[in-house]
Each structure stands twice: as C-alpha cells, then as structure tokens.
Length: 80
Image (cartoon, rainbow, N blue to C red; front, side, top):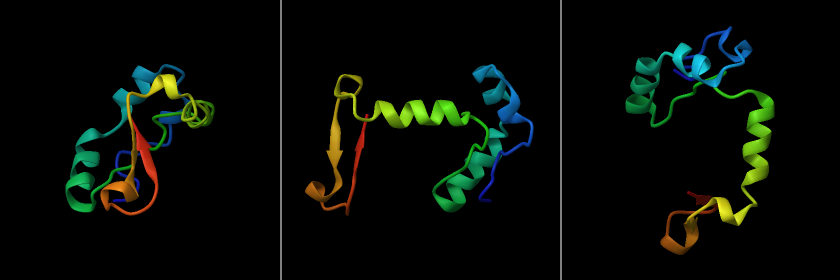
C-alpha cells in the first residue's frame, strides 16, 4: 500500500485543507495498521516540504529533541 491515499490531483490544489480533504484517510489508516506507515502523497507541496526541512534547525520551534541512540533505539533523532 505504498501510495495509500494518493490521488493525482491532490497536490495541484492550493488550499491545504482541500488537499487534506482529498486524501483517502481510511486507506492510510489501513496502511498504518498493515505496514506501520502510510503515505499521503500530495498533502504537502514541494515548497512546503522544503520549508519544513529548513525549520528543523530552529530550536525555538521544538519542545524537545530525542536522540535515538541515547535510548537504545538506533541512530538518528527526532523533534517535537
């Protein structure tokens, strides 16, 4: 189910709410249950993804940073 919830026209919509409404969230839920992940292709445009990537270095935007190795969960980190 790698492309769960994908629709070809979703990414073309300017309004993020309209894009979110166009996603088949039931298929994504099924993919999460079956595979542990689901892909909502088209939910974010390329420029929005780039802005999110850039924001990762801005400490003030995150409450906490988790270093995976420190907790025995492998490599990498995540922030929330």
